[in-house]
Length: 201
Image (tube, rainbow, N blue to C red):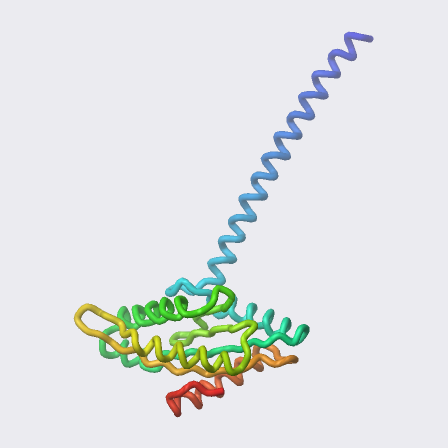
């Protein structure tokens, strides 16, 4: 009987070790898959030209901020930023120059905002900027400062220096707003700003 017990003991231990190894491999494989999914999701959220979030990620963030404003009444605003002369730059200097102008504008904007602000490229010549915990007057001041700084920092193409013309539409995020409603107001104010060449409230 003792011999039979000795035979079963080692077999049971080996079986436990095998299961432990298999579980460790499964956990490692699962962790690798999660990392790959995270990388793919991050790619889906990033603009292909600038180092900024894309429209998909921006809309999700805008919806989150709008919901937070509705629940807590905290101030926030959306800035729709358009490079007015991007087509002229493309036509005169080529598409590579146009791409350089977008990258240049993204770099300027990124350097002028708070770490809590959310900047994204949302269209061909458009950027969106979410200013969380910022009231209406402060959002207007921010828009005016961005226009001044971009205008004062032209793009050096080597053989030519190109000024970047920009218009900004500002929309305060109000309780009860959803992302689409805020975007519609910002787009309306952007059109007015393009006509007046100054930021609109």
